[in-house]
Length: 245
Ligand code: ATP
Image (cartoon, rainbow, N blue to C red; front, side, top):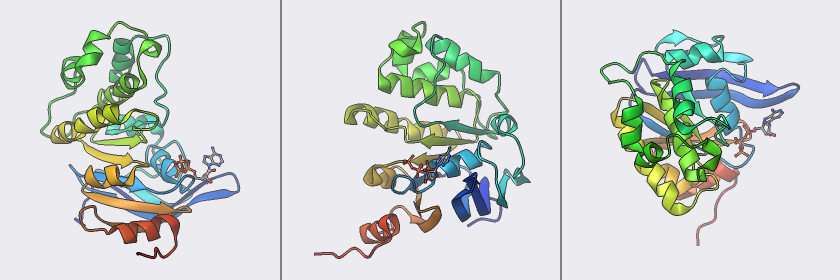
């Protein structure tokens, strides 16, 4: 790995009350990279994302973003530094229109990634044309896939250098998932690195440069998505040797 990753977690530990959810996590993502994080239910993937965005405090270890130690930086300050999350379940502002959901995020925006132009409503509507058509609708009138587009758009309006996506395919039809995943390379080309938590291992692998697998709060595998084998993933995912044949 290069000497100055965009985001790096070193020996990160975190938890809830007496429960330790993350054990000495080492994690890196480079500028412009797409990294997938996979693992079974309860492995700690969401907790790791929440730790990265300051929603779960780091108990031990450290985290840097753009070369600065941000281990104790509050969530709102991390957003304006360029860390944005599309949370599981989307968490849109109900009762507000599509456009107002997008505009609200702009109030928390930082500077765009070096050399990139800022995300604007116009650019988002180019990315997701259906949102332009539905811009005045309350978000609860939209389909699940359209709501997910709003959630991604809202995160992009904060001008992230790193976009963390927590199970953006959850509950969506395959065609809609494909539409949303097709947009990820466009987002990446705009200079934004992406960290994807994804239950569909095949989709995660083909959409990413590198993959991390978690099991019971620990990283059990990391490697290039094109190089890790199915057997390695199965073992890292379930913690058991997979008998082939
Ligand atoms: P899923 O795919 O089900 O979202 P995950 O890999 O994202 O799973 P986490 O949601 O990070 O896993 O959960 C990791 C562990 O932390 C689980 O044992 C879970 O029960 C526990 N946990 C998560 N959130 C809390 C919380 N707010 N309070 C207490 N324990 C929690």
